[in-house]
Image (cartoon, rainbow, N blue to C red; front, side, top):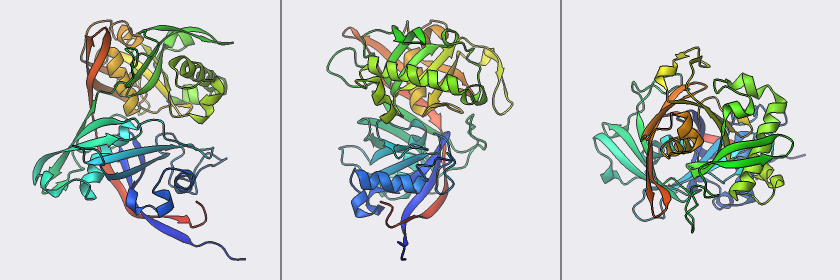
Amino acid sequence: MSFAAQIKIPATYMRGGTSKGVFFKLDDLPERAQVAGEARDRLLLRVIGSPDPYAKQIDGMGGASSSTSKTVILAKSTQANHDVDYLFGQVSIDKAFVDWSGNCGNLTAAVGSFAISNGLVAADRIPEQGICTVHIWQANIKKTIIAHVPITDGQVQETGDFELDGVTFPAAEVQIEFLDPADDGEDGASMFPTGNVVDSLDVPEIGTFQATLINAGIPTIFLNAADIGYTGTELQEDINSDVAALAKFEKIRAYGAVKMGIIQHVDDAISRQHTPKVAFVAAPKSYVSSSGKAVDASEIDLLVRALSMGKLHHAMMGTAAVAIGTAAAIPGTLVNRAAGGVEREAVRFGHPSGTLRVGAQANFEHEQWVVKKAIMSRSARVLMEGWVRVPADSF
């Protein structure tokens, strides 16, 4: 019996923010995977090691969590005044499914670095010393993101003293601007799909909850922690080991997605795992983070915990941080109320790994809320580069 040989594909394994993933240049992929479709999905599933009934991704590059089961495809931009097109694929761990419905804000921090190092940014735009501004077209959500990448001696600077809770070692700071992060729509309710900053969300057999449903950064369902039996100081093990709690969150997510108009029926949620997110908020309280670091209530404006791909995230998704910053800037949202109900252009929130600051500029224009941009700092680093190998018959 003969078996297919392995093929090798140029790839880079990168950390961006509190996530990591496998990065590809579009034209390095096998020809049939250079276009969207089954071949591309099957290739990326095999690269990451999914679907894996053991949920360990031992036979692939995935790290058995939503933060590490990620892929990125980059190409010179097809859009005017942009450097690079950025396509993100969230790979399911235990299912044969790649979700293309949203962005990864954390890996965005690595996109600019990869683009510079791999010839996707014009050489005359890269300074010998200083900051290179990379204009990114986020192809999943059709939005512009600007990355400010530090350069030393004409090369991307990756080391530095910027510390990011959820990442073990310091690195160079990369500032990210998410321009016009709210969803685009024909009516005035696109950021708030129901037209309300707070809704009543009815979830059969679970309850009725106040909720802020927002499309900014990534579609997110915000709940009050106390309404669902939590304090907002929970760590991963407090929720991820509770099967009943995870099932409750998934049901809330499904009904929230229907109310947001993202899906037509709750059963459709299973095929759209990446969006929307569910998060719960509370007023500041002191707690001890997952690393053992004490977070004092005086250091933060509110507490936020968020779920990604069915599990409580170990820190905070970058796109969800955009949603948090945006909602915090808009009076009356549950996020704004938890943060004291005052006007603000920046918020520091506590998450399981520590704290994060995010800024957003919101204005009320033409009878609707408009957010011009959200800003946060992350870091990125190349972990490995070379080739990833997959069986030739796997896609």
